[in-house]
Amino acid sequence: MTAQELVKKFSEYSTQDATMIELAWNFAKEAHGEQKRASGEMYFTHVYSVADILADFKMDQPTICAGLLHDVLEDTKVTPEILKKEFGDEIFNLVEGLTKIETLKFSSRDEAQAENWRRMILATAKDIRVIIIKLADRIHNMRTLDYLTHEKQAEIAYETRSLYAPLAQRLGMFQIKSELEDLSFKFLNRDEYYQLNAKMQMRYAKREKILEEFKEELDKVMQAAGISYRILYRAKNIYSIYRKMQQQNKPFEEIQDALGIRLITDSIINCYALLGIVHAHFKPVAGSFTDYIAVPKANLYQSLHTTVVSQSGELVEIQIRTDEMHRTSEYGIAAHWRYKLGQAGADRHLDEKLNWLRQWIEWLQDLEGPREFLESFKTDLELEQIFIFTPKGEVKALPLSATPVDFAYSIHSDIGDNCVGARVNSKMARLESELKSGDICEIITRKNSGPKKDWLSFVKTASARSKIRKYLREHGVEE
Ligand code: MN
Image 1 (cartoon, rainbow, N blue to C red):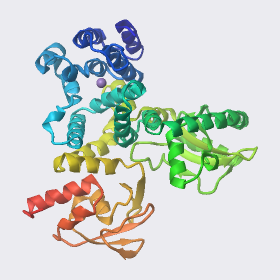
Image 2: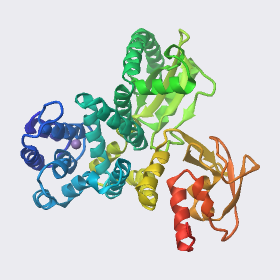
Image 3: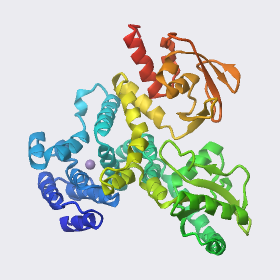
Image 4: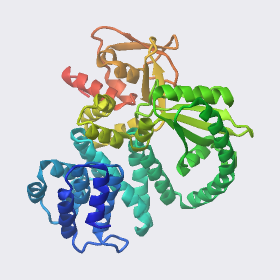
């Protein structure tokens, strides 16, 4: 790739001035000089590949520049002063947020890793683009992991699977999450990865024909309805199949990874219309319908899900969504960022939708020490979520094995601080008991009762933990 090619790609989606991109290109190229990657390639190839991925996400000019410059503070002689002087505060802050602190300052690698995550999350609180660049950086590192030692591969792949992939999922960046998971899987379980990949390719080759037939039939039915839509096949995520095999303790042959298609249309009303048409012509599987449009997932994901039986008796999973929902589900927060640019900051929904992220970061900031930070961070990123209802039917998403105390704090800190008991599905339950998805939980409060120190030993969310600590600190309770 050349600077001109990157500029051209950028200018296809943005009207922002691209001069700075060329400057950043030349500056980074010179700064990295003769540095090489483990593959023997010039280090600079990594740098512009990250910028290229950011252009795939259609990010703005400062983000592309920061992508080009993201390793200059860590790996070259360029000082913060020079970088700031040459590229200004905005780009400098992005790059600085991505720069690790020296490992030597910490007693262990774990601690260093935790502290670096904490720094990055704090930088993300100030500017969401920091985490988007970091994910692009990680995608490229994972794509080019072949040249490192097996030990180093495993270490990086493990961190990717346990932290970056769940984070991408939480940010709604589903495409990125899948790629990170599959690449980690490849390096962590090489044999299983290649075996499964081969089996899946065989299965999909057979199924393509079935899907073609189904698609034809669907097309006929849909065209009569006069609603504009398009059909997409669903990308496969090898790791998610593997996880299913582990969870259900079954071989690949017994895993029902259904045929999946997506129907993309232009409005929410038409999503429901398409759903009606699908159900009228194909028998839906009982209990398979989920409405993530009316009740979106915490990661902003929206779609209608249903499973129907095709003419030939195969189960077909169908996801119905608007174009906007589709972009959001692939690029998540990066897509929202883009809309915001297009509408000159008029996206009220962006703020609303990013609210959970801001709040989460706020709670994380309040935690003590990097270790506790990383622990809560991991728990909150758990892929599995449970949904708990208030007696009035309001729903809260919580991590697996969350307790009534977590639930109470998720409603309001006063309710958390003053909770003394809980009724789960109308029965009294202990505060440390684990909630299950679908539970209706009613919190019993008593004025000024205050949280107890031992709650810290069983709460699961960063929010509860941070609020309990805050209360104890303010009331002079020793931990
Ligand atoms: Mn890098």
